[in-house]
Length: 438
Image (cartoon, rainbow, N blue to C red; front, side):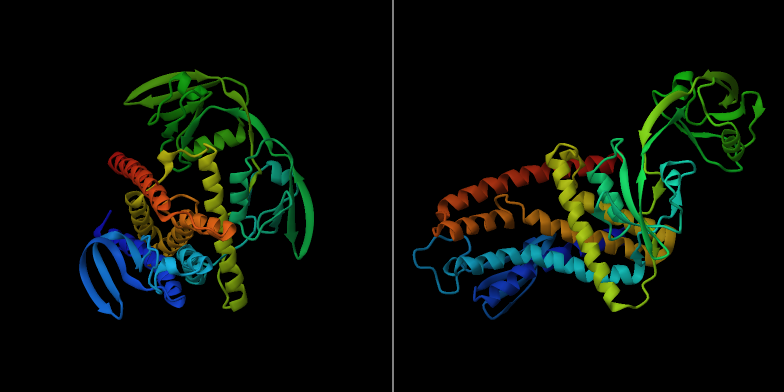
């Protein structure tokens, strides 16, 4: 991580928190609630000034922020007229909801720039596996666009990824609606594929056929092949390069026949034999996730594509939350501030290396949109100490016409806050371990 990439990550965090707290602030002011302090960051103040009844502060620790409202956590019999607790439930509900809502609004606004610079994600099929399920169903690359899968409308290519993430292929037939030359048709794909495998990976280049990896447990590994081995012959045929090895397997598809390989390892020549194993897997046999077209200046298309972008990320966050609660994703897979800073830094550095400043900016924009939506959704979870927990108490009051005693609500929020802090410490520990391990 470079200083510049860390600085960009801190700026992204600051923007997300600033917009979130600004949502609380602007709605609180609108309904007549006094704000004692509006701050960015935590800890001691670096800069601060007073305007009206509100102190505006920039604090030393560049994570978090606050919009401290009059009487927010106090239990008074006769609170001041501009107190949070003096306002009707609907006003307090809007104030608390505004923070997460403003994060979604920020993501929507940033999507304009993301689409304007990076283009619009289309539904066009970009590649079809030879003799695969999609090709057998008549789908062709660069001619067909997917408009629905199993009745689920597809607004952009990444929706297909999202659908398969939440509906893993299980061998059942998949129904697609595809569009070609303005006409739609429905096709059925059988995703079951079978064949034989040995478990090696290599580069199809003019360099020597060196193995980049050998999958443990598969025939090549069991026969003694290891990463770094250079294959020189297969069944007596000389292999001079990675490309030659790829050509050999293209001309002699792997079946159940035994393969004899000569390999060189550390200057030593070895002869190894293996028998490919049969396998069955599920695959649609095409790609249509990441095809983009340049935005042509159509404002209507920009708006609709930005809404599509927000809908996609909202769905993505909700689906991953469901996977977390279902045990399909572990707590160890979560990232806190350190992990997110590392991810943003990697996005900056990879962008600069592969496409220059523009690609780096696009990468950061996309991550910021995701993080802003994620912050909005996570804050709406009905967990004490989060906005969602506070909304739950307000809804209880609106339904039963009686507020929860402030003392009881305070204890629940305190317990929730303590548990959240424990979770954050655990996530921080995992983030640091991942950084150390690289």
